[in-house]
Length: 251
Image 1 (tube, rainbow, N blue to C red):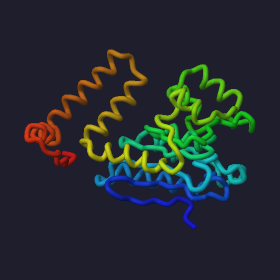
Image 2 (spheres, helix red, strand yellow):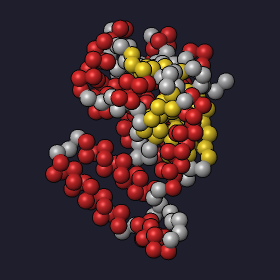
Image 3 (cartoon, rainbow, N blue to C red):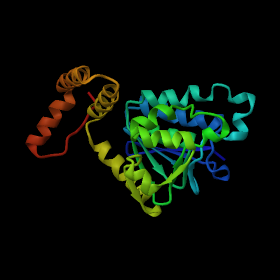
């Protein structure tokens, strides 16, 4: 059985963690397969957006504890999580059930998060004598307020979907049977947008988060000026004038 199922359709790559017997805990093969899928998203011009999901009653409970205590686990965070930092195309996490530890880190590595009303979120690493090693200590305080982030990190406490939405951890909370439809709805809107502009948008936003405002607006201006010279920008103007859908070429 494949530990990760990857499918591609209409510009969207679906990456589905398929280890329901261990609540989609990730071992080395799983992490590598997910990283391979994100490599394909980044390099395939036909792909515009990714959706990450999990099989069964969990999104992902993090790293497989049995595996992480084995010699093969050395350096397991060194490929997938850095790849999430460099992706220029958007990723949506479709979350049901448990989203903990490395699962929450992967969800935080996505750009948009949709969850079911039964989803639960938390970092339990403190109870194992660890800290989140897949950028969780850095991404969580950049996603929600510092105080709530530190409380979750220090205590290992879990929160439900309603509190995750209140804190801004997730964008949408939906019924279980609407989860994938909502993720695909958002992905479909992104696919219709100008691909170069989407990638520049993500790059500019992410760079700007760690810059003083006067430097960040310079990055924005450079990206804006560059995009205005592209064929897609010209096509967008023509399509608007001619009242028709644009034909994007990513050029």
